[in-house]
Image (tube, rainbow, N blue to C red; front, side):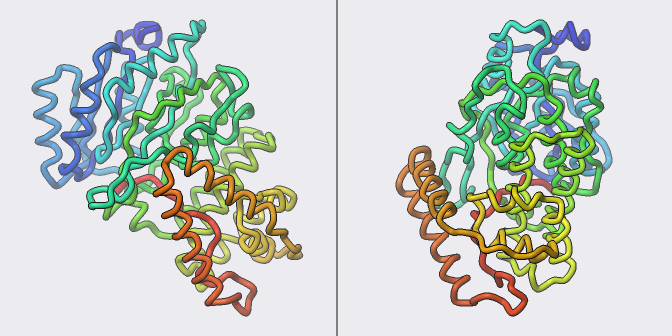
Length: 396
């Protein structure tokens, strides 16, 4: 299973690195990818109009490693840059490496070998793995933590489809801890949305890809090291409306592809509630436009699905009915309480007692703050929320 059969280039994995002004981290990112030595690898580094020293760093790596190829181009944004990288790639598989992250040695070697171990006539469409959260990066409190879906993706068979394990799209859209078969991406005409900056375009790409994949394989070993919420990233500076726009894009993908699987639709609703919960915590209910946008996404969710989501705070589910203009039912809290216990137990198991207790203290402080504010006259939730903070992807 080599690139020869798909593109004629003899390349197994093409790693696409879209780069804009990340000179502080870029050397580490590229050096980490270069540690793969069992697969035929190419590393396509795209300079998206950087104004810092990023291009010089790329050129140094290109000069000393023949697998590195630099493409210097005007600034177009994340989506257009990755699309260009995919178009230039010669590999059987495509991968994305953010220039402010890094990968552990042999990530691409191991994922490619894992895909090959299934001995399929056509290689798996998607090879997925969990990732390491680099929490509070660059501070004395920096820690390496397992992601939320580590030890939770348990398909009954491999390869599998998204309908067999819809939880895969319920969590952070970690598009970079995966390999994508290049022929599959091309044949399905899958492309990133092209907008200025980062634009959260990983969200619709994630659904577009996983919903169409006929063969997914999953290796529950984290390799990718993801720095969360760096200053200046899209997660730290984004317009609150952006997440609602991208959720609508994901819903549009499901509608266009005719996705009716209940599990996939439930996972999509969970993502919508996560974005809404974060926005409410930042005062979105005080803004008429944001309230309308939240109402619009809640209107696309089935009422029974909303009621069934025990992992979403009851008050937030009641808010969903209110903002979508429906009669507001009484949502029981018992299931949610049980869910919190399950989440604590899982966090305890994968990240240790210290982090689990810290997360519990943060949650209790948020709830106390919410209770002090009390319910709004319009029935909203003020600034409080009952969901953990999401960790949207970084970007420009």
